[in-house]
Image (cartoon, rainbow, N blue to C red; front, side):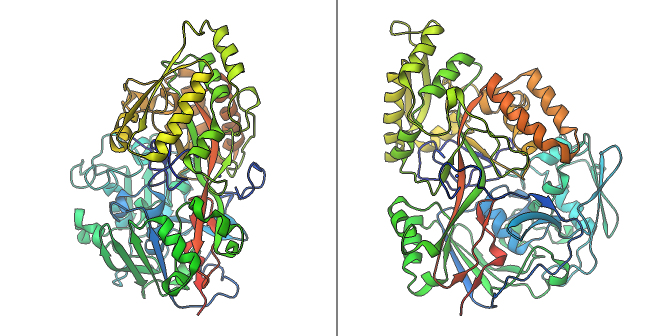
Length: 586
């Protein structure tokens, strides 16, 4: 499976494995002005292949201080090979460099070379990518970074024991990747990645991968020297190449970072190092952290929390505490997933008309600071995005039209004596999820459906909702998707191609359609500059002809920070702050 956890989002409710480069948990869910989908930051809207270090200075920034970051999420580990969630990727962005990186410049996020001298060179047939490493880059212990280290790290990302949670683009695209099992269990003669010398990384592909420069931002491209790999124990202190390094790490509880004296700013066009360090604490209730930070007494004044703003604190951040709160788009889209194998298209359209989106949001305790209503599978910050209306003019808001839905059902031969049955799992151990379910069930029944709601514990529901042959026909996972990079080729191949179903995994609609597969393949083969508008057209075509799910809102990134914390900027690629540009007033 290629999907990750969607990072924070709202309060509850759907909690159904929203997937992609994301994180811990969702609800049913994003832009600062509710409903204004035109005013959205651009995610990775360009490339700067010639960018050089050091990174641009932040005007007025001062050096010094330690930023405390209490968070409700608890990373499973910090092994670079195993990361696919936005919280751990954000943290490792402080300590680990990859071949490429995002840099926030002039109000937008752009792709720049990091360890590499450029964004890679591709062969004429598109099947070989070559990256040349910069000179003079070292680890925290002063030893040099080599191309062999990058190659070993990439090989390691295939190991099912060390990288079970990693993205799988390398398996999909690298030559022989589907069979390779990594450096300890795999074929020692595997040639999917090679290092012909100490400064050159060569990647061989089975098919074109136009988004390789974006994929190269992932921690899986961070070098690991083979001689210093401690396998499962590597998570306790992965060797740093970025401006910070691990000082101490207590799994499940705390991570403290300090300066890496061997990092050279001249080689790094993406990162600043204003802070002396970072203090991350895990498993902290967001509302408690946010309350203390807004009060800004003691440590709260130099703290930041990136969880969704608690509804009890909204009034404060809309009034006297507005200068301590930032929101902006993240990478995630939320949907109502509908099993196309079990629900005919016209019935799926009737569900879209009947669905009580606003009542569900209210029952789940969401505020417009954590989402923006929407109707597209592609979020609006992605280049080429095309806006369109949903079924019968749906715009991501409203409470459903029961009368119209009943008429639509009647046209398909369903009515009071012969209702169409909808079935799904919901969390029966969450008060918010139960409130949401009461609203959902009532509204769908009012629209003429028979509803079989199956309450199970949250942990069990997550497993069942991700089971392809579960005895339900809607609300299977994933309940959404977070972009892996700002292009739609990180959405549709994973979400609607036949691959997921063929592997026994759930997807949007559990689609297995030859026409959909063929169109995905056609667009993927185009130059990256030509794909944006093609994916946007595909988005609308997929919605109108297949409706595998009902997209209804875009996630927002939130950050609450103390009165001494400066320059907190939302990163639209991850929905997290740009951590390396933050500074603290002394």
